Length: 89
Image 1: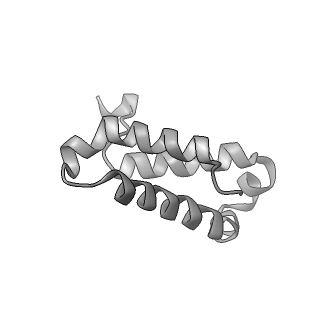
Image 2: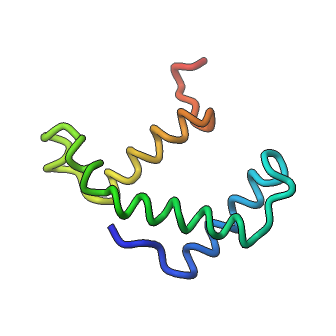
């Protein structure tokens, strides 16, 4: 998995700022946030093989890279309290 290009990185920073910074870190500077987004993106790229290896073989061998990324995003959003399922009521 390649790291995000400059446009995707900037748009991720902008979206995070709109949704999160005012709530969680109002004193966070834009350069600090850009560095954090870049670090998270690099970590995802650096650890893609470990993540892929951790997936059960049927999913690992049939899912696309985008589907694997979305699965991880769902898990992380749920852990962050940002994903609700119909079953949650």
